Image 1 (cartoon, rainbow, N blue to C red):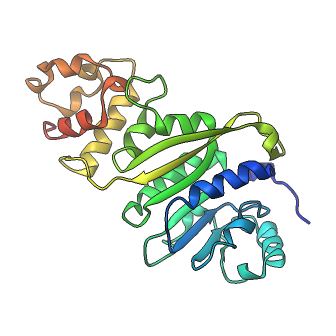
Image 2: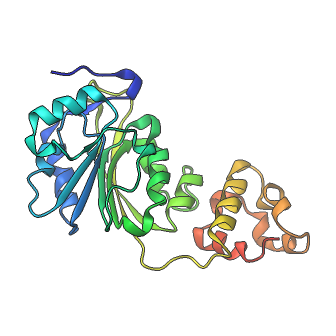
Image 3: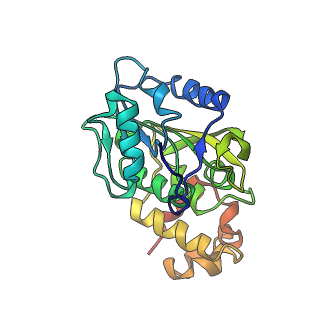
Length: 250
């Protein structure tokens, strides 16, 4: 058998009805390659291995779980990448879908890592701490709209699908969880540069209680800062507005 490791933030999904819902969402999109992040004891994996005509790989840091999974599922003998997801190379040479019950302690880092491969990842179906899932999907003006929202949404349409209660896991986490789907957008934002956009968003939200004029004054000439848009706070600005402002940066 296996042990649960708190140090790795392990909370294994056990609710079969939730598992079936996640798999059903995944199957709504076609894909040839599938990467599972954090298979753990294989609650999702056993269903993913039944999907016909796909290449499947899983990333698992815990050596004990790797050994367990390879004994439990013969198909996984050469399909598990025994590393931290944050340290792996791109796992496929062609586009791939990502699915996972993401470790909550590194879930935002996982999303930013996937962004590095955004041109190769059309769909992500993931379970997160509910607060993180809500932040990712939040619209402008929402209390939880922030850096994560504004950096992910230029590239992906994000749908908050459903809650997952603590009792669906072993052991139960102390927080509610949520499943989201990210679908890559076809049209990119018109930005001065990707770097300029990231710098602007991070600077703006770093002092989110201040008006934009005070929060990002180092990035613009004083004449530009006279525009009324700078009277607003960062959480009031859409990703399109942030994008248009990049063209006015120093």
